[in-house]
Amino acid sequence: MLTRLHTAFHVAVVALLFFSLVQAQNLGGWASSTSVTGVELVRVEQFGTSPSGTRHMSFTLKNVSERDLSAIVVISPDGVTHSIDFFGEGHLAPGDVYVLRIGTTEGNRLLRIVAAAYIDGSFEGSSQPIAFLRAKRLGRALETKRLSDIYATVDPEEIERLGTVSLVTRVGRLPDTAGEAITSVGNVRLANATTDDLRGAGPESRFAFLAGVRLERENALREIGQLAEALAKPTPAAEGLSASEVRDRFVSIQRQRFSAICLKQQQELEVMK
Image (cartoon, rainbow, N blue to C red; front, side):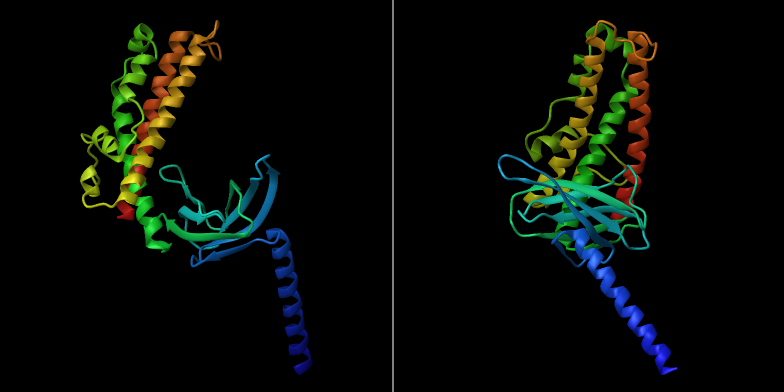
């Protein structure tokens, strides 16, 4: 009996040492610092170096919890915060991985995993990055609703008469300050969120709100630019469609997409409150 127990213990120790060795090889000398139990750094690879000395790295993060993740916040060795946010677009299921590709210039090999948010509204880690995440999501949700309202009333014939510049004008320029961002979405109303939620917010939360508004608007303006480029070609038709049909399809797709994302974002905002 004792012999069998000794053998089993020996096998377990060997297996643990083997696992630790493989894990160390996968991390390539890197380590992670975290108070988040649901996220683990499982692989690190360097895939390039710029002339300035910046190392281009890929960090594979795994959801080791039993819940779906909606966001992960990490800090790279040079002190830059990176938010991986699936807001309104999905989640990271248990066992799944996400590969973060960033550049870093610092020599130390430590990635800090500082926070994680789950789709059930709970979170782990520091409260500060979670507050930043909430404010950024508020900005994204209000801007998405604004864009959804715009596309709900866009007439493709207006784009045909005036060009895509008419759509660019309705979407508007990127705000430069939190005040401009708040003003631009001030008339937008969601069932569970308004700009009133920013009352008393500090500069970091206001900056996060600005970043959220800019992110959604910048994406919308880029997509309009892509439409303009397609229509400017000698043969703008795609997949056998006429220029008019290309415009109609663009507006139809945007209406459906923004409407669907808007609904998902509202649901996730409500859960996270």
